[in-house]
Image (cartoon, rainbow, N blue to C red):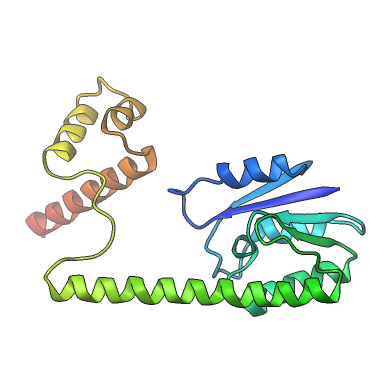
Length: 196
Protein backbone atom coordinates (compact mmCIF):
# COMPACT_ATOMS: atom_id res chain seq x y z
CA UNK A 1 0.00 0.00 0.00
CA UNK A 2 1.22 3.51 -0.86
CA UNK A 3 0.71 5.87 2.09
CA UNK A 4 1.39 9.62 2.01
CA UNK A 5 2.56 12.02 4.70
CA UNK A 6 2.06 15.78 4.35
CA UNK A 7 3.31 18.31 6.88
CA UNK A 8 3.24 22.07 7.34
CA UNK A 9 4.87 24.05 10.13
CA UNK A 10 2.03 26.47 11.03
CA UNK A 11 -1.75 26.80 10.80
CA UNK A 12 -1.26 29.64 8.29
CA UNK A 13 0.16 27.14 5.78
CA UNK A 14 -1.82 24.65 3.72
CA UNK A 15 -1.16 20.98 2.96
CA UNK A 16 -3.35 21.13 -0.16
CA UNK A 17 -0.49 21.20 -2.69
CA UNK A 18 1.23 18.26 -0.99
CA UNK A 19 -2.01 16.27 -0.71
CA UNK A 20 -2.82 16.85 -4.36
CA UNK A 21 0.63 15.62 -5.45
CA UNK A 22 0.40 12.58 -3.18
CA UNK A 23 -3.08 11.72 -4.47
CA UNK A 24 -1.84 11.99 -8.06
CA UNK A 25 1.04 9.65 -7.15
CA UNK A 26 -1.55 7.04 -6.10
CA UNK A 27 -1.54 7.27 -2.30
CA UNK A 28 -4.48 5.34 -0.87
CA UNK A 29 -4.22 7.07 2.47
CA UNK A 30 -2.67 10.43 3.43
CA UNK A 31 -1.73 11.51 6.93
CA UNK A 32 -1.43 15.26 7.56
CA UNK A 33 0.26 17.09 10.41
CA UNK A 34 0.84 20.68 11.51
CA UNK A 35 4.07 20.92 13.45
CA UNK A 36 7.57 22.23 12.99
CA UNK A 37 9.99 19.87 11.27
CA UNK A 38 12.45 20.73 14.06
CA UNK A 39 10.09 19.21 16.61
CA UNK A 40 10.93 15.67 17.70
CA UNK A 41 7.32 15.23 18.82
CA UNK A 42 5.34 14.47 15.68
CA UNK A 43 2.49 12.23 16.89
CA UNK A 44 0.86 11.81 13.47
CA UNK A 45 4.15 10.70 11.88
CA UNK A 46 4.76 8.32 14.80
CA UNK A 47 1.26 6.84 14.40
CA UNK A 48 1.78 6.53 10.63
CA UNK A 49 5.12 4.72 10.95
CA UNK A 50 3.64 2.35 13.57
CA UNK A 51 0.77 1.52 11.19
CA UNK A 52 2.99 0.69 8.19
CA UNK A 53 3.54 -2.98 7.37
CA UNK A 54 6.18 -4.83 5.39
CA UNK A 55 5.74 -4.14 1.67
CA UNK A 56 4.12 -0.71 2.22
CA UNK A 57 5.63 2.47 0.79
CA UNK A 58 5.71 5.84 2.56
CA UNK A 59 5.61 8.80 0.17
CA UNK A 60 6.29 12.47 0.86
CA UNK A 61 6.17 15.47 -1.46
CA UNK A 62 9.70 16.58 -0.51
CA UNK A 63 12.37 15.26 1.85
CA UNK A 64 12.06 18.25 4.18
CA UNK A 65 8.43 17.30 4.89
CA UNK A 66 9.67 14.14 6.62
CA UNK A 67 12.52 15.67 8.61
CA UNK A 68 14.71 18.76 8.83
CA UNK A 69 18.16 17.36 9.58
CA UNK A 70 20.32 14.82 7.79
CA UNK A 71 20.48 12.66 10.94
CA UNK A 72 16.70 12.79 11.39
CA UNK A 73 15.97 11.81 7.78
CA UNK A 74 18.55 9.03 7.69
CA UNK A 75 17.25 7.65 11.00
CA UNK A 76 13.63 7.67 9.84
CA UNK A 77 14.40 6.02 6.50
CA UNK A 78 16.56 3.40 8.25
CA UNK A 79 13.68 2.71 10.65
CA UNK A 80 11.33 2.26 7.70
CA UNK A 81 13.80 -0.06 5.98
CA UNK A 82 14.06 -2.12 9.15
CA UNK A 83 10.31 -2.71 8.95
CA UNK A 84 10.51 -3.67 5.27
CA UNK A 85 8.83 -0.40 4.27
CA UNK A 86 10.00 1.47 1.17
CA UNK A 87 10.39 5.25 1.05
CA UNK A 88 9.59 7.57 -1.84
CA UNK A 89 10.03 11.31 -2.29
CA UNK A 90 8.05 12.77 -5.19
CA UNK A 91 10.30 15.79 -5.74
CA UNK A 92 13.70 14.16 -5.24
CA UNK A 93 13.03 11.02 -7.28
CA UNK A 94 15.13 8.21 -5.81
CA UNK A 95 15.03 4.54 -4.87
CA UNK A 96 16.71 4.04 -1.49
CA UNK A 97 16.81 0.26 -1.95
CA UNK A 98 19.82 0.61 -4.30
CA UNK A 99 23.36 1.78 -3.46
CA UNK A 100 23.08 4.66 -5.97
CA UNK A 101 19.68 5.62 -4.58
CA UNK A 102 21.02 5.70 -1.02
CA UNK A 103 23.91 7.90 -2.14
CA UNK A 104 21.47 10.30 -3.83
CA UNK A 105 19.28 10.24 -0.72
CA UNK A 106 22.20 11.21 1.58
CA UNK A 107 23.30 13.96 -0.80
CA UNK A 108 19.74 15.30 -1.10
CA UNK A 109 19.38 15.30 2.70
CA UNK A 110 22.59 17.28 3.06
CA UNK A 111 21.51 19.80 0.40
CA UNK A 112 18.06 20.19 1.99
CA UNK A 113 19.64 20.90 5.39
CA UNK A 114 22.13 23.32 3.83
CA UNK A 115 19.31 25.17 2.02
CA UNK A 116 17.35 25.49 5.27
CA UNK A 117 20.38 26.80 7.16
CA UNK A 118 21.19 29.37 4.46
CA UNK A 119 17.57 30.57 4.45
CA UNK A 120 17.66 30.88 8.24
CA UNK A 121 20.92 32.86 8.09
CA UNK A 122 19.46 35.23 5.47
CA UNK A 123 16.32 35.75 7.54
CA UNK A 124 18.39 36.57 10.65
CA UNK A 125 20.61 38.96 8.67
CA UNK A 126 17.51 40.69 7.27
CA UNK A 127 15.95 41.04 10.74
CA UNK A 128 19.20 42.44 12.15
CA UNK A 129 19.45 44.99 9.33
CA UNK A 130 15.79 45.98 9.76
CA UNK A 131 16.32 46.40 13.51
CA UNK A 132 19.34 48.64 12.88
CA UNK A 133 17.13 50.76 10.63
CA UNK A 134 14.47 51.03 13.34
CA UNK A 135 12.00 48.48 11.99
CA UNK A 136 10.75 45.39 13.75
CA UNK A 137 10.53 41.99 12.08
CA UNK A 138 7.67 39.54 12.20
CA UNK A 139 4.15 39.48 10.86
CA UNK A 140 1.89 42.49 10.95
CA UNK A 141 -0.93 42.24 13.45
CA UNK A 142 -4.10 40.78 11.99
CA UNK A 143 -6.18 43.60 13.48
CA UNK A 144 -5.19 46.96 14.85
CA UNK A 145 -6.52 50.43 15.50
CA UNK A 146 -9.99 51.16 14.13
CA UNK A 147 -10.46 47.67 12.68
CA UNK A 148 -9.92 46.09 16.08
CA UNK A 149 -12.20 48.66 17.70
CA UNK A 150 -14.91 47.89 15.12
CA UNK A 151 -14.54 44.15 15.70
CA UNK A 152 -14.93 44.65 19.47
CA UNK A 153 -18.04 46.83 18.95
CA UNK A 154 -19.58 44.19 16.67
CA UNK A 155 -18.87 41.51 19.28
CA UNK A 156 -20.16 43.60 22.22
CA UNK A 157 -23.39 44.45 20.37
CA UNK A 158 -24.30 40.72 20.36
CA UNK A 159 -25.80 41.24 16.89
CA UNK A 160 -23.04 39.32 15.11
CA UNK A 161 -21.57 35.88 15.57
CA UNK A 162 -17.81 35.47 15.91
CA UNK A 163 -17.81 33.76 12.51
CA UNK A 164 -19.55 36.75 10.89
CA UNK A 165 -17.08 39.16 12.52
CA UNK A 166 -14.09 37.11 11.37
CA UNK A 167 -15.40 36.77 7.83
CA UNK A 168 -15.96 40.52 7.58
CA UNK A 169 -12.46 41.22 8.97
CA UNK A 170 -10.83 38.40 6.98
CA UNK A 171 -9.22 36.76 10.02
CA UNK A 172 -9.41 33.34 11.64
CA UNK A 173 -11.76 32.78 14.57
CA UNK A 174 -8.87 31.59 16.75
CA UNK A 175 -7.07 34.90 16.13
CA UNK A 176 -10.11 36.91 17.22
CA UNK A 177 -10.52 34.80 20.36
CA UNK A 178 -6.87 35.62 21.20
CA UNK A 179 -7.69 39.35 20.91
CA UNK A 180 -10.75 38.89 23.15
CA UNK A 181 -8.63 37.05 25.74
CA UNK A 182 -6.00 39.81 25.69
CA UNK A 183 -8.70 42.47 26.14
CA UNK A 184 -10.17 40.55 29.08
CA UNK A 185 -6.71 40.15 30.68
CA UNK A 186 -5.99 43.90 30.31
CA UNK A 187 -9.41 44.72 31.75
CA UNK A 188 -8.81 42.45 34.78
CA UNK A 189 -5.38 43.96 35.39
CA UNK A 190 -6.85 47.45 35.27
CA UNK A 191 -9.61 46.56 37.72
CA UNK A 192 -7.05 45.01 40.09
CA UNK A 193 -4.97 48.19 40.01
CA UNK A 194 -8.03 50.37 40.66
CA UNK A 195 -9.43 48.02 43.32
CA UNK A 196 -6.05 47.29 44.93
